[in-house]
Length: 395
Image (tube, rainbow, N blue to C red):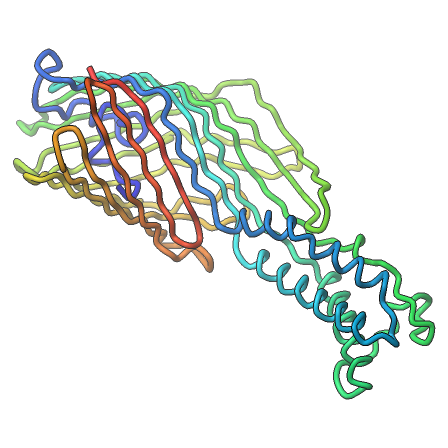
């Protein structure tokens, strides 16, 4: 449903979206199947550039350029053309994968949620991986590849195009026609920074009546343990250096949320996640902070289903060198039958730079049979893809 849930979450996922929603049920637990045991809940979202970078490495353009240089003969036009074409391809591929940020966001968890009309509770254990980064195309690589391209065009056109570059030849002697293999010395690298977050949370929710207004209030104290990573991989080989800073200590933070029925069909919700910021430092001295996140939402109940919108009130900082985020989400759920619901949604980052502006469309299904539930979803924006799976039992 486009990542919405602040005003629509059930006992299956209120611990992630808004703990106040555990007390939003219209009937008592004894009269309805308001509770859920979920194992597992899994979702992952990755940028398209992760696949593009892997395809770049798998295509081995640098290896093909190595071969072309080793068989280069300035008196053989075919070998000259090969160096031009492959060097141009490598230059373009490096520029393409370096143009956009790379990110991965995924988690797997277990949830026990007890929903009720006036109060509720939930227990959650979750592990999440968040990482982002980019390919850094070095100035030296651009200059070297341009030198290959321009010198080979100069030879192929008998001086009508391109320009001579004596620096690519052995001892700077263009007359000997010998090009040293410098491709293994390319320095463009892909770097990433990330977190592996382990969370143990206990949600509690009550319906309170300040000034005769019924409001659901919820809180999720969370114990959090985080490992940080700095990774670097040379773009043209398989050498990867990963630096892990394992922190065995557990820190505490909390989520707090509210929900209120504005009329018989319209519900408002709001949540502040991680009200106590958590600060960490990687082995390379990079600071990473898990900051508070403020989100609000509306949900409207219809005879055939429900529609909802969520909005990040504040901009959320990226973990590393990726784009910041401030999400707007829209979702709808259509009750096709009592045992199956069709879902769709749209999620848009209001503050992302180039490569992050495409909205993420999503579609999913929920099946319920004899208390067992299955939720599946898939999303694709062209810039990113996402998938989710949730198995559970309703009681």
